[in-house]
Length: 356
Image (cartoon, helix red, strand yellow):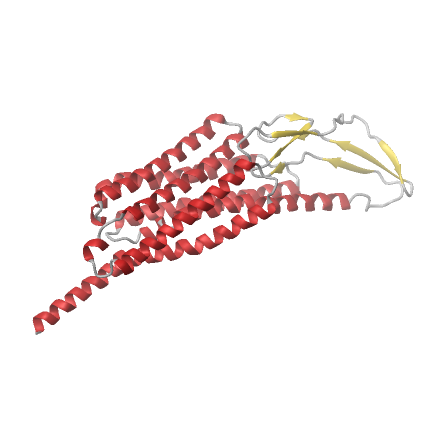
């Protein structure tokens, strides 16, 4: 009787360990995945409400990512239910990967690759450096292929304890994903810093873009790096908590960037109104008020097509003041500087409006 009791206690202890180290991480990963999915879908709804004029390809991309992320969440929930309910008590099944699990990992790699490729085109058009842009795009594509290869290898090996056999593939996938994210953030931040004009409103706007770029790039890079570290240092499934939600982080970062455009429009418009409202508020009697329209930078998110140039009426740079009598006897002079074309560094009489 005592022997059977001891055996039962040992079996129970083994199941508790398996539940904690193998099934528990999958359940937590699914919960985190669904929570981030809710935030992602709210941003998708906001995007379609506020961006009706975006090009068809961009709307298609967002819709496609919504479908892929929905599929990813469904697969994550099924994996958690399958291991914790359907295979409860079945040790051999708990220790083995499934086809559904493999497809879920593939969806993570595909979503991450799509988002990184989009940002790669942003780098290409914003900086004007074709080689740099295509290098980022190629690395993002390879990251997706490595993720698919990792999933395929896991399905072939099956046993979770044997995943170390292809750990080189896992390391290459996650580290490349982190490197691409950091590269995108570094290039965009460097460009935005170089685009500063010295005018407070414009520089504040560029600073907000810089903060957003750093935040979105670092989140996914740190997430992938920590996932890789957990995979290498732990002999359980806790690294799956991060990898199961990685697709949602990429989706949320992209939508955060796209939806921030409306705030940027409002910020620029508010700065312009504030600047114009100060015109003429000085001494109204025989006062020379110089109103200078400086270079305006209108940076939205960049489309993966050539930037559209909107011609500003050509006004020669004044060599003398053009004066006009204002009500109340006040004279004012108006001068207009040449506009600065973003991305090329040249000065001409056109302003490039970037929509991404």
